[in-house]
Image 1 (cartoon, rainbow, N blue to C red):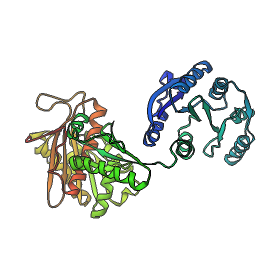
Image 2 (spheres, rainbow, N blue to C red):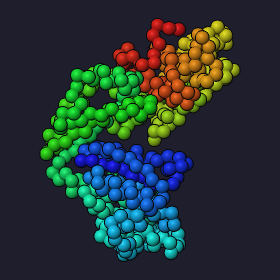
Image 3 (cartoon, one colour):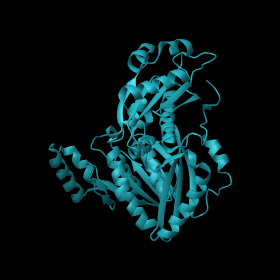
Image 4 (cartoon, helix red, strand yellow):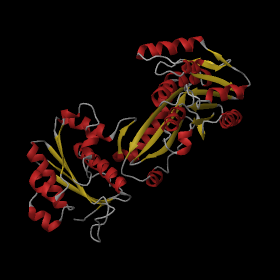
Length: 427
């Protein structure tokens, strides 16, 4: 079945606001088994919104309309829906009562214009919104079920997951079980993954594999279906096993988990503590690690030693190493990791040093040159990379690679699989 997403708002047309709602809506619709084929963005104009709704009614089975349900004069999506259906707006008492209770709960006076949010197209199926003020609703427009959701991201996401998807399940695919799983891959290009998985049937009828790049990683999404859960589960597992047989060393986690979350799990299992010394990443690795609640269990400290003087004074990097090899080098990275570990008393030290650009590069060490080191009391390792892109991209992929290197180290898999930007046999 075909689905589409319609985003409404002048702020989206002008580019002053990035449309994150459409990106969010597409995922659960796809996981449900719908083929999202169209994304449309229109401004706060009744005629334009009517055109989008009429077009969707002719080509799609499901449409999710995001935004334009607020109380102000430029919120005209509800009126456009009524005109498109050739009906009028009527006051929905349940929606009005919920609206009043909402304002009472937050201790704010409800102004008369808020009543507009309870005036909905006659015959619409109302979906109350406990996460905000605007009621959502659904209408049947030709062949298309059109779901109208508020543009506030938190409200939209909750209504989509708790109202829209269950209704679609009951109406469109009763008795069909849908399962999905995401395998998160890092260290390979999308074209390389496609080549490595060329022997796999990406769409068996019961299971479908899709590649979704999300820099700096790639998501391999498996969606399966069946008349029974066991049937859908078997199809999903069969597809997953085929993928893992080839890419297992590059799959760092599944579903909504993150690289830093996976590293945290492994650190806890070892009961280890970590100290990080960063130069080119400027604290980004430490920021990523501390995004995980409870990371204080294993993360002792993060040190941003950007200048040579700070590397000497804070980490104890020998001055002769800096003079002989430079700040961006294997010996310096190893000394930074060792200094972070020894001076913090942690079990492991992790260090990054490199040239993020756009200046600072040369013939021997071009922009994108990065060294990442790990040090423990028993061993130390360092890897040399040459990343490409602008400054932000290089810093982002360096932080991700540092966490991935630590993950592989904790798993004992450092010698399995080569990162696409790794420089072999080089100092």
